[in-house]
Amino acid sequence: MQAEIEAILGRRVDLVNRKSVERSPNYLRRRNILESARMIYAA
Image 1 (cartoon, rainbow, N blue to C red):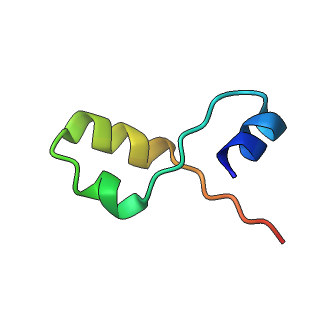
Image 2 (cartoon, rainbow, N blue to C red; image 1 turned 135 degrees about the vertical axis):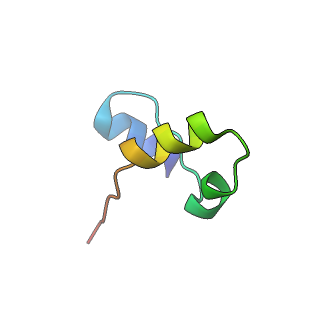
Image 3 (cartoon, helix red, strand yellow; image 1 turned 60 degrees about the vertical axis):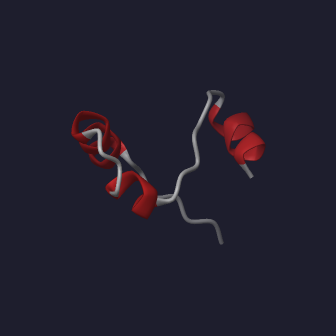
């Protein structure tokens, strides 16, 4: 799935579980990721 999304967007992407980001002890990284995260739905 990651490779397919990268091919569509033409850039590298990281697929992560939201809960794992929310539990991250690094508050700067956590805040940045959660503020810039975009949910993508496919039909």
